Length: 387
Ligand SMILES: Cc1ncc(COP(=O)(O)O)c(C=O)c1O
Ligand SMILES: [Zn+2]
Image 1 (cartoon, rainbow, N blue to C red):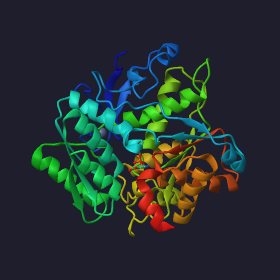
Image 2: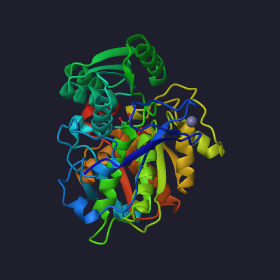
Image 3: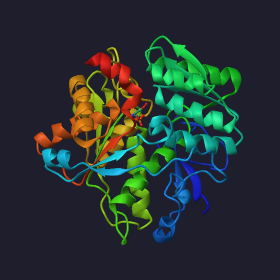
Image 4: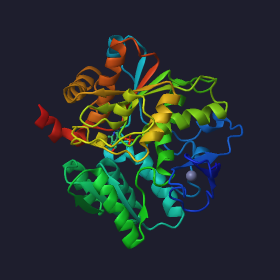
């Protein structure tokens, strides 16, 4: 099993970059996407490998021994009561069981493994919270120095996680946008590798593994099956682009003959710059001007660095963006836990609120996969305070 990584392609201008070298963005400022040799690959053989995040090695950029914390293939649960209420066949992909309790383990495990094999020994990144925690844990495992810039308002659980793992925590007055400015300065001052969202091409590939697992779990002995609709939380939008990219690649490999899924991105109405652009029919996402206020800390991203690209992927999938309110997010956390037994993070629970809005107007086609990006355990204080 060897990586089939062939090149890095700029999502903006299409220029190709050397995949064997450590890269950031294209000279034009565009984000780079990993491109693979997608000649036929035997799915039956792949399915005989251990059921973990590293199963689809050919479609990952990591060549050598990865830095791993034993990432299991996470459950794709049926949610019978919710399916009945929404009126369509619905599943919940639950990434709560990953190291650090969120899907950020996928981006950290694969992003850090690739960066390390390309010579990086020091990383700096801005984070809404969970990514910083995950990179610090993987950094501890790898013996790598990790600096995380984070808004002072980021959840205490994430701040403690970074510090416990020996990461260097730099708290910033302001939002993740201000943290991003500081991270760039630290990268310039220290020579640390800047691993901000979309500023390097490897993290996204980790997030892709979630969707490869989902498509495989829905499939049968004849191949993979794609859901008609994927409903996911959108902060920076990495998970959304990763879902589209995973579908593109399995279709190209001939592992399914299904059409690509419709992507529905959910944001909180306390910070929903991409919803606002979608509703306005705009091609460009303007920064959120108000205070970025939501209990779903991962969605406090007022100026997503590749917002326009996320919008493009959502539109091209025939999907849409939807905003939900704070009360609906918290109610959905309780609802999922009490009806289906899943204690979801607010970001993940927001997908239930978003799917309900679409079901009400008859705009939800099954099979649907809702994405719970992490465990509610990391949010108990905020949930308790909300009441
Ligand atoms: C739990 C959780 N869900 C969702 C998101 C948003 O993810 P993305 O940046 O891929 O849109 C984050 C980001 O911090 C997060 O921590
Ligand atoms: Zn470019």
